[in-house]
Length: 448
Image (cartoon, rainbow, N blue to C red; front, top):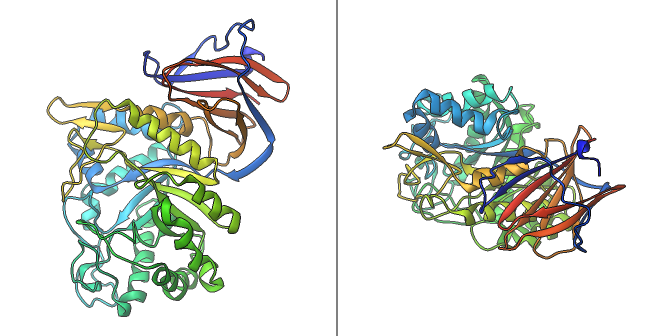
């Protein structure tokens, strides 16, 4: 393989490499190994929508506390298409979520059937400025997935946003109009909308903002309210996602919706999270039975605190991204893009990690392993790429690959063992021996 057509980027535990371009990238041809990763760019699968993270009020408030120079560093690290990850597919919450400073709703006046009191005043304090700055730096490429954690308290059976409860049936059509209004108001602020999910984690009664739907209730809401509201407004371009919860029940949850033709015609696909087990094969089942419906990873983070300096966290991210992409997932959205050193703020103490943490005392940002591991996908697999065959002969070399719109090919290789593993990278008439260092991730880019 000609070096001029080959680039290798590495991140590894036992070195200083962090998304580092290695030069020269190739091992001596005399290195002998029977290991191989075989790429077949002629066999193409799903189109990749992109990668990104979530804009939450907690992330925005943390960002607002930072000195301007550090703010610029964070924005560049995530959203600059040349110097950073080039995030293009992100998520935000409609009304409050656990990563808000407290419960709030855009339309909090009971009985406001016309949404006359609807306002983005809360979002304008911190959240909108962050999203707008990121959108500008990205060159206008960011598209937002909107997800509600709870309707306003007055629209719920329990009269409160936290601890579950359900949508009052008589409020269903008004609640559907609320999604559309929120999307339209964000567009007026210069932002672009990818889609909406019906409900974040609809099977979980949480201590924080939450709302319960059965699969049949979600089906009926989409069929009778959300889908018609969007279509009647001429906004069928706003994608509707169902489920938006963990992989373990994804097949049983989407089946009643996808088996109903009237509901299914409004649904682009299903979102999912990672918090209970792996269950990667369930994604494959959904695709095999409903190949016209898309799959999108919409949330994942390391739970239970900030986990500063954890290397396992980055490996968890990479393993999930590889396994999800290889089972027809079209994009991957991380959770909070930024939190403080404690993994907050969070109005119910549900502290978690983020790829970038801001130490308020030292006024310093700390890049976690997850930041670098996500970058091996986000930086080198372009929006509009197609996944291709990436067949590994070694159980400890986990891999996925894609052909980009510019014709380049990117293979990502994960090694979670303490042993360096050499392998042949084979693609058509190209063949080179590469070493995967212990506890590492590689992005191998073959130029067009």
